[in-house]
Image (cartoon, rainbow, N blue to C red; front, side, top):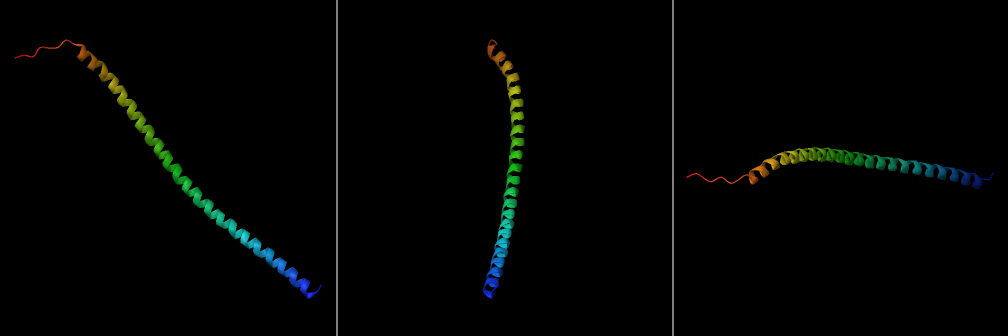
Length: 89
């Protein structure tokens, strides 16, 4: 094998090695980006769960308030239907 062919073979091998190294480092960069995205998604998920719990609590409070209003409504209707009292004095 001539010197030129040996140099070409070494250059090819070196080129493949460089490309493989660059490719692997690009994968590491993507891994970092995916880790950052996953972290942000976890934060959003946590906020959504917190908001859902708050909404459920508000819904329960509203239902309780509606039950109280229903109880009061019957008494208000009785008072409105009752004959008017004549004031004294």
